[in-house]
Amino acid sequence: MKNEYASGQNGHISKLKEMALEANITPVFWSITANTVFDDKKMEVIPLQGAYAYRGWERAGGKPTKDFLYGNDQWIMNDALGKVFYDVNMYPKGMCEQGAGSQMTFNNRFIAQPEVIEAHVQNQVGRGMNLMGYYMFHGGTQTPGLEEPGHPYSYDFQAPLDEFGLLRPSYRYLKVQHLFINDFGTDLAAMQVFESENPVRNELDTTNLRYIVRANNGSGFLFMGNTQVRVNMPDKNATVKVKLGQETITFPSVLLKGQTTAILPFNLKAGTALIKYVTAQPLARLVNGKKTTIFFQELPGVNPQLAFDASTITTKAFEGWKAEKLGGNIQLSAGNSKNLEIKDKGGNTISLVFLNRKQAENSWRLKLKGQEALIISDADLMIEKNRITLQQAGNENFNVQVYPKGLNAIAGIKSNNEQATVFDWYAIKTIPYTPKLTITYPEKQNAIIQLPKTLPSNVASLILKVDYLGGSALLFQNGKHITDNLYNGTTWHIGLHRFMDGGDIELKLQDWNNSITGVAPELVKEINEKGTVFKAINEVAQYQAILTITK
Image 1 (cartoon, rainbow, N blue to C red):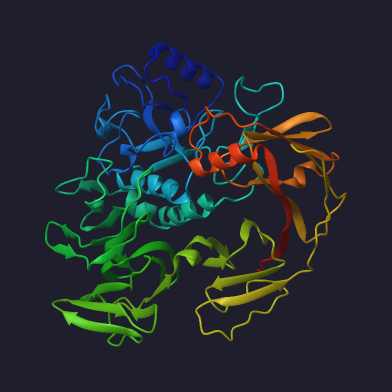
Image 2 (image 1 turned 90 degrees about the horizontal axis):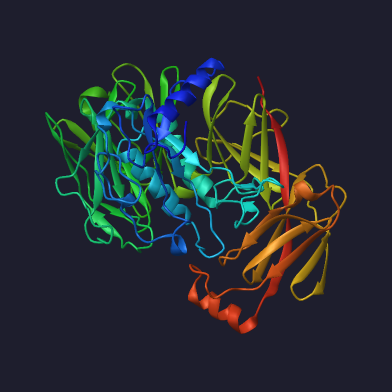
């Protein structure tokens, strides 16, 4: 992939491709960033797009953009919908540079809100993108000696995985999208895009509902968005009808909260059962033999409703749900239960499990003992072969829920199944640890942190939380400038594991410059009143537990 050369000489691209082939480089496809002019009559590569919810190269990270308006094509980065210079139907739609954050500069600061990052990706999928390549998903640090002049050493990018490998909220927000794409992507990839009758084209429009449909052979997903960068969107009550060739699907009215999005399925197959609609977002689909389990994320403030094609199921009673036969459908509304199990005409068991937003963000997909499974945990999970590593900050005790129930998938730990849920519950207790960092302040704008030599086995790292007022903070070790932080009003989290063997670290604050844009006015006022100063430096242990998966 060649970055941002679509408007350049086509011979350059052809030569690079020739050189790569001579070196036995044979990727699945050749691509180019085509958010500039792309001439498909000259280029022998696939055009892909780039877009950012926040534009770090613009004042204060940019203004409201049209990126949050659904369309049926791709677009030029700084222009309106529909102004590409090639036939988008000739190529697979995809993003090679989907901003999962954005880089601040010395003059332009902003906070990348996780719900905005999520909504930006959801919009891309809704408009037909089947390839999602991020920039950057993991922040980094510039290599010493190769730093780009005029930029900070840190290339954190406000990415889902930060410069030190710590998970930001945007990681979990995007994971909700990724789980959906992972398990429903095969269906989604074949679906075409169908715009609404009156699509919203004004990014400042806060009144009209933004929505689009992807469908194939009468089955599909309704995408709704109520998030706009730099604009506070009000709650909306949405009622949408999807007109298909042989029928019209009428979704019950749902509340779409401001700063949220939703993906609602229609004519969704589960085994041989046909789910006409659900007022909740599909999260994951597990198929184990004759049993299919679909997890849904509840929309905030919305009681789940759904309908089955009555001719495709044999179940007559729906415990915990209010049922009504209407035409050929059975309409259901959640009562005192949020989970549902039915039998289809093919003898399959279909389980629908509804999770709240926090549970959805804390869900992880994997295989356990040959079964498709799902884990819910507040901890960060790293899964490899027969081992699961749990990490979390500030809490030495871990809780894990495992589905399907009864797998006994964790070696050496007995599950607590007293709770009436569909999950096995595991509690892992470790020993608490009180970090002992010595912090001294030789000067008002200077702090020296003495690090411990070792950590207990259940502590993966220490996280230093630095709150300050000023323009920026620099980190030194052994007199060498390692990385830095540009002040935008948030706490600087530093993962100390990479510094443990190198001796003390030193923080130096630099003064504020009133030419800086993007920081909240009340914070600028506070800086000008109090000057450059540390407000607090605290440390928290990042605990770790390692689980072994039974075979």
